Image 1 (tube, rainbow, N blue to C red):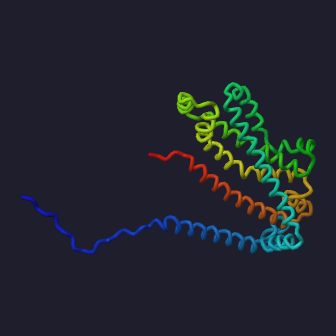
Image 2 (image 1 turned 135 degrees about the horizontal axis):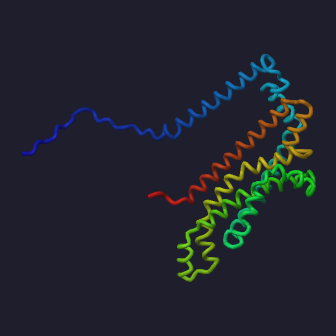
Image 3 (image 1 turned 135 degrees about the vertical axis):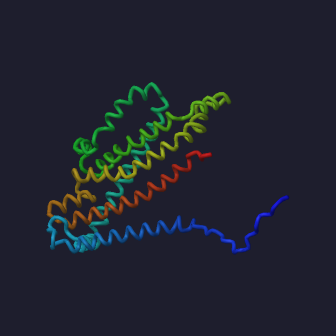
Length: 276
């Protein structure tokens, strides 16, 4: 004898889709907390300045805003920011292009790569700020020095990640293409490039903020224009507001670069195999 299961006659509760809140609500909350935290810190800074802390050393937000307004009005900020941005972009493009090409070429030549590897790592370990005086002797204090210093900083990061990606290519895929009659160009185009692209894009992602670091280091060491020059010039005049104003601009540029980094990160993920 079969006993039928009792039938529930109450209302059926349909679970709500929380995906919108998980995607947007949490993000909105995080940004609101961030904005509130910054606002609180600025208010406390403004109150503490010249009451408990000497403004000669820390300035205050109102003075920093005033300095930014003055520099915007007379064109100082636009001129020097544009120079620094150009140096960052040119340095990144030059260093990234050289790093990708060198990574593919040297990593494909196993014996050459093994011979040069310790020398490359030794050069990579040198603090790039130590190269600045030498670059000044070679290229002067103009834009070329900053571009090349940024490129040298970017080169090693892109090169090492690219070389690692090339050396980790599945040899079975290479052999399969060769068994099907494919030549070196087919192996490069159909196996090596797609398989190593994760390493390439990871190197580009990591190197973007270092282009900013290399450029500013060059401007701080010796320059007559750029945001690094503004920092040195303001510091020499004990203009703390000017120093902080320049740091604010550099923070904005870094934020934009972080957006670029995020975009590159999404691009990297497109090349990753999907998990089963």
